[in-house]
Length: 374
Ligand code: OGA
Ligand code: NI
Image (cartoon, rainbow, N blue to C red):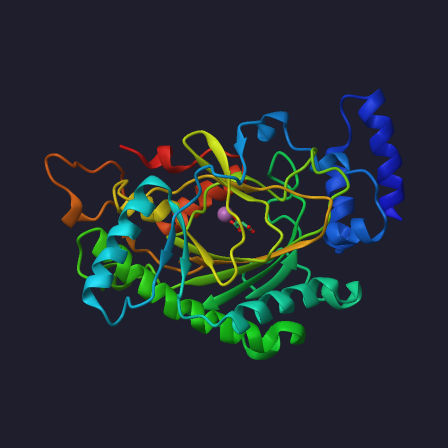
């Protein structure tokens, strides 16, 4: 009901009135509890105005596919057994983390069957009956499992064309019965595997920084795991909205599982570069807090997700972050990395203060890091 109504009002308002009642349209959309998928299922042919991204979000300097540059792919085969291979891998991780902030990993130890089943589970959740989904609908992140559309619906400049299930998996995992049955077992299994991979990645990153392999884990970078399971519905007008607007991730590290559809792009030397889906690969990216504690040896890079009119896309972003823990630990540039030639570039902050500052801005496209720069 709200859908047909908002469609006609949008058309009128777009042509007749420059101002429209954005707040009540956001609220009406939110109250359907059916997300963007609900709009698509209702047969919407035009993107409602609340989803219109500012024009500058669609800069045309996108480099896609072909022989152009793409993010590094690092094969982890042999990393645990062969010290020479490990050294080579650490070198690649170091370069990729500094110059790209993004890389893909192969032979990371997570079976393809687990990855596929995780994505199937997410698809099952979003494609189930809307009444079943509604039971999980909430904006209360003190719960460990929450479904909604646009965590920053009311604060961001424009809504994004995606729906999300949020699962806080570590250090305090949900009780199994808190997870929807359609992906309960696989979420527990997948998150266990992601934790293991996270430990390895933080070892490699510690070594890449010239530190003891346990360094980053010892300061709790791998302690908290939040999984965001995203569903990007098919979009009737992909030129008007985005699946995710330009942002950088605010945690320490993100491990992204994406299906075959594509749409993720990273900003590299002022060009939007596609991150092409690669079978069996996982996408790794550096978060703001790792850039901060590494004193810019690692780079947290802006990225976005385009929508498409071909088919829905599923991804699972696993964030290593302690944002949800009552953790008063102060994070600043790691002392061992600092010298006269490399003085500290940031002031110390708790994760909570960093995230609070980040959330207040919404995914508005500007990095909060400069705010913490000395
Ligand atoms: C994110 C993100 C990318 C994707 O959740 O922060 O950037 O492809 N996701 O879903
Ligand atoms: Ni992101």
